[in-house]
Amino acid sequence: MGTEILTHFLEAPFSFTPFFLVITLITCFLYFALRSNSVYLIDFTCYLPADNLRVTISNFIEHLHLGGTFNTDCSEFQERVVERSGIGDEACMPIALHELPTEASFKASLEEVEQVLFPIVEELLSKHNISPKSIDILISNCSLFCPAPSITAMITNKFGFRSNIKSFSLSGMGCSAGLLSISLAKDLLKVHKNSLALVLSMEAISSNGYHGKIKSMLVTNTIFRMGGAAVLLSNKKHDEQRAKYKLLHLVRTHMGSDDRSYTSVIQQDDEDGFVGVSLSKSLLHVAGNALRTNISELGPLVLPYLEQLRYGWGVVHQKLWVTAGKRETYVPNFKKAFEHFCIHAGGRAIIDAVESNLKLQKEDGEASRMMLYRFGNTSSSSVWYELCYLEAKGAVKKGDRIWQIAFGSGFKCNSAVWKSISVPNPEERNAWSDRIHLYPVQTPIAP
Image (cartoon, rainbow, N blue to C red):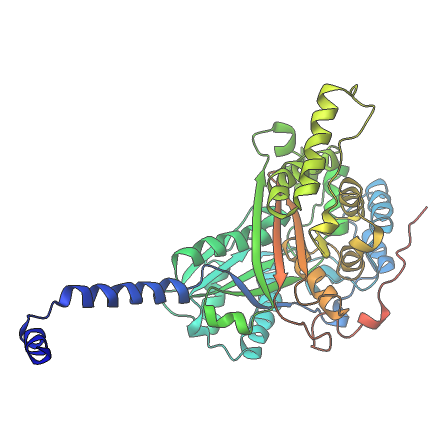
């Protein structure tokens, strides 16, 4: 009987359909299990200007009066602004702005881009032994300088990237463009699997000074300094082992449909034909509105449920039972969602306003204040100098969550949330290593 069953089994035709079905299911399972939808930040590098590029406050003021560009009233106005700006004596400007008269030329801006971006790209790639041919996506952002060939073309030519690299040069996006570029990279990495993305953020200030007499346009002369950052991202699963951070959330807010927001930071020419960027008196109000709109979307993604309920109840209570102006809406405790805050160092007033709106303590804004003091407003790269500061201080621990907040013309407010997935080495050399032992410092406020 047993022999007959065995003979029948051996003689029966073998069906390949179930076999291939099983193999297909296993293959699909392995594909979806091993592929990564996450975006990892392998590393980043911030530009450290040479000491000879430092512009002390006294040197800045001396140039104002000796340059012959501004009348006494305009010079004294800028002097008052820079003394109250929160910027210290170590912030740097490109060599063209050290000269008298200053060289506000296309060539000067081109040289500034090369001076800032070339060394940080070289440092980042060589540090991790990454061939330029391995980069799949290249994104640059520089708001006011948009040359042809583009900045990404300059980088491609310098380092010999592949001919099929996906490159994008963003301009006109303001100080929030750094996180906007991360958003673009994130979207591209969703489509292009097993890819490396290099994001470059800077602002070229050599040829973008304002030489007129409108005070709202003179402010930018006093707060912007040179700087830049290179950020290396990956969606490769195996890169999780060497990455510093994992991107959790990225929320973008654009208030451009509102005229007041749209014109709060705007490049224009004055009646004498001088071009500059005007900062309106309503800027802080506009930034506050943009931040509230941004966190209304970010909050549900990051806040504990109890904090969300408290906030929701506060809104209802405010609308139904409390007379307008008598009680503030409950502000969620964002320190329950984040261990660190990197607030765009657009100026002392911006940092103060964000701290106030979010009910943060002074120590929560330390990285932003110290970044502003040492490097000035470096525009889109400022949030990376702040994260660099936190690493150099040894403040970032594995599992910590970091909230980067950036503001920019348009008006825009962008938020990025990162989770530390490794233990950053505070002894690792970065833009803060040479002087981190001197910080934090007390930033003086001029009377």
